[in-house]
Length: 65
Image (tube, rainbow, N blue to C red; front, side, top):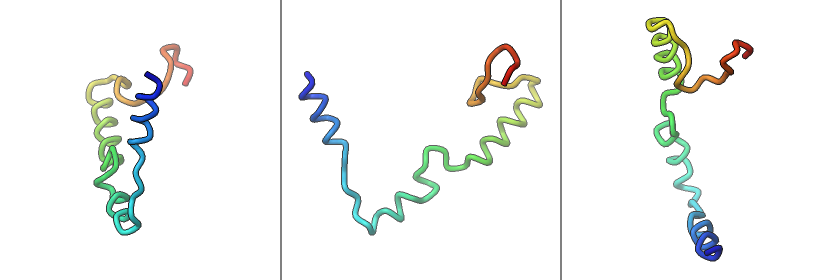
């Protein structure tokens, strides 16, 4: 079983040619291509609905951020 995990871990690594690194570094390839727009939409949603949280904000329920 541990050999299978090791094999899967090692097969996930790949060398990327230098010519392709510029393409992978583009904004389109990131997990969140428009972070400013998404944070603005979350802020508008919080003001409109009168509630904050549930998306990506961090904090406890006690009000001590």
